[in-house]
Length: 71
Image (spheres, helix red, strand yellow):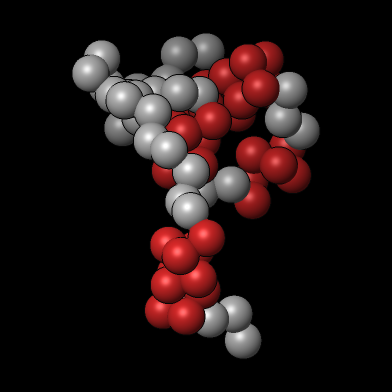
């Protein structure tokens, strides 16, 4: 059965299939992921000119922790 491009259930079925086959995700992992997480996990958010970023140093991490406290 073919689904129209605008059909949510068809798009979700195709995305779940890709997540299962390419990433090994189970249904629960797929349904709890955000669309952005799926795109990132599949590597679709990387442009051809994307450059890896260096990890945050201690000072940057401390500043982020202060700016965005948990709790």
